[in-house]
Image (cartoon, rainbow, N blue to C red):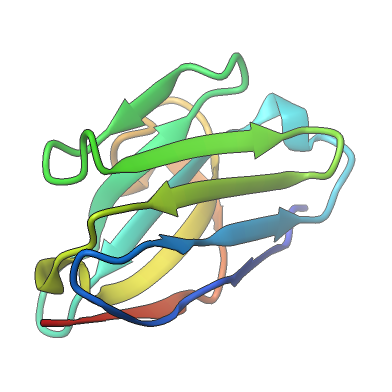
Length: 121
């Protein structure tokens, strides 16, 4: 069992930066792929970024070059650094742990509660 708690969301102006964080419980954190997804009102949950257990990284085209994901297995945390934020990045951001098809929601077993990111234009 893995429990995930996100933090770091908030309100930021367009062009600004935010760093989210996800803290995971459990001794097997390093064996999971960790992903971030987001869901805007009225839209489906979509893939944002992921990092495998071997630290390979994957990004949605919409955030490539602006977001960077990293993990610290010693601290059981995963953190996306989000730069050059746009109004269309506004959403609830979710952390997830799993494996397999890590660029889709199907690849994840455990999910956090989400943290709101609002980008004002």
